[in-house]
Length: 348
Image (cartoon, rainbow, N blue to C red; front, side, top):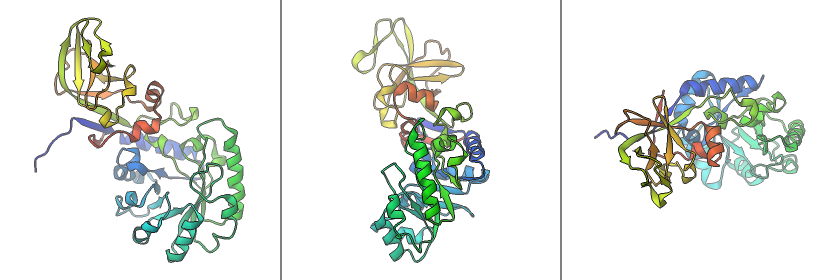
């Protein structure tokens, strides 16, 4: 088979990933600290993320779907895996076969699992104010859960990234639910919830974004390290004379004779048009501003000060998540999960 190298690569700093998990674990107090690895580890590769975090001591993982769970088989010894979207009628074969627990989120799912789950353990989601997945409190306390082997009872914070009164209301609601429904463990806090303090930690926290370099709240600033570094190979370095335009729509005109580096990346790879006017890359110690519009799979940078840059060299995109989110208008989640399949994933 011919080995073909992609002109795009996503370098993943595994030391930063582990350091982020350890900081989040410390903030979780006595609670265990798990990891959300849905959406293929937020785009970084779920299997590799699991491998690194298991080595660091993480034992509890969460994915969205049974297909994501199947892709992680076989699980490392001692690892717990939960499927957040529960179990639909078409999921029962997978749910009986795969060593993972459904997070039951509706009366229909509870009944389906009770009827066909063969007494196996499950998790249950209770809605305390998000109005998304989860049983309403009055449903959860109606007796429908009696007899289930509930490993973890969960809820999810809707506004933990904000200083919102909803956080305290959801905490109080979950504390009430905890007293009414027996389970081995209780879990409420995501990345932002961890930053709200140990009152929100209960027995198990479920960070996602912050593991991968996102800063969910100001309390995490300065503690969370960048994990994902997108890189693009230079296809061409060309001269653009003063007054000549670059890219579709001629939105950027050279203010002087300039050297332009054209790289093999664009909105088809998740680097969207909203980066125009604010995006940048680095090469060596220099910063190269993005110029012109982002095309489907081409972008251009002003490399006038990057002496020695040539075809085949690699540019590292400016992709610190909080900064890039503020500049582009995209959320930190979109920046991570939108990076496409043409990126070769690799650890450093």
